[in-house]
Image (cartoon, rainbow, N blue to C red; front, side, top):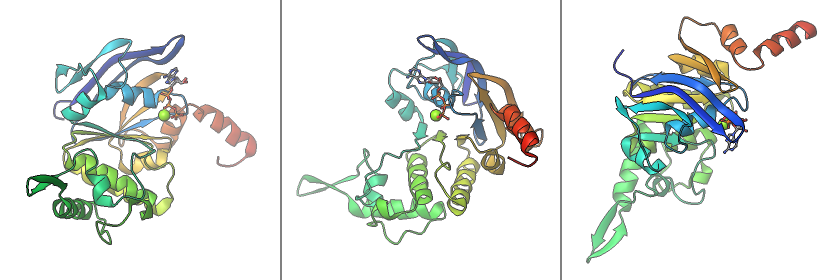
Length: 259
Ligand SMILES: Nc1ncnc2c1ncn2[C@@H]1O[C@H](COP(=O)(O)OP(=O)(O)OP(=O)(O)O)[C@@H](O)[C@H]1O
Ligand SMILES: [Mg+2]
């Protein structure tokens, strides 16, 4: 494998008396889909927020492209190419797809010296970037609110890729989606990974993780047993590593079926 783009070394994060991360080490490589699994409260969001400059670790070191990461504000991480797509997307439903695509990065053209939003350029780029992800929009003026949940996730992913993400962090992108929309998002993740971008995919769902993941890190109350590689781990083992795995197995035994 190539050099890791991010190295998280023995990361601890305490919130007062709460130990959200108790010494987690993970390397993230370009072109891999790295799944981060774990039950509620396991520390997944805290981990990616530490990775993207939102939280400072209480202990431990983070290297980005081999250098100590020292981002003062999350915007620094974004400028360096670490993009996070949150579950609750920052989009304005009544505004067009292309307006949302360029929100905060508006292209400008001057007419008689006065700056205007460059609709033509924005529309062209938005249509092209969405097409690359396998989605044919009715038109760039379509309101984001009329897209499906999976399509909206894809807009957010395509936008991050267009603006130069090297690491794309997805926090539960499939948790609110039906089967078909989930497969669209998983296909999008696959395309992004093949472009050499590192994808960090957070999910509760072992099947979603196994569909696209190259490597798997399971967090359990702020700790991990390490990272497993595709092919070296079965769905049952992954499920068991997640908090509740053992309890689910016991429940399954007592109910006499599959939970
Ligand atoms: N800002 C905060 N202040 C205090 N405690 C926090 C803070 N953020 C997270 N925690 C605590 O840290 C632990 C890990 O939380 P985190 O949100 O990282 O879990 P998670 O794995 O993302 O869970 P979920 O699947 O529910 O999103 C929890 O016990 C949580 O209450
Ligand atoms: Mg979370």
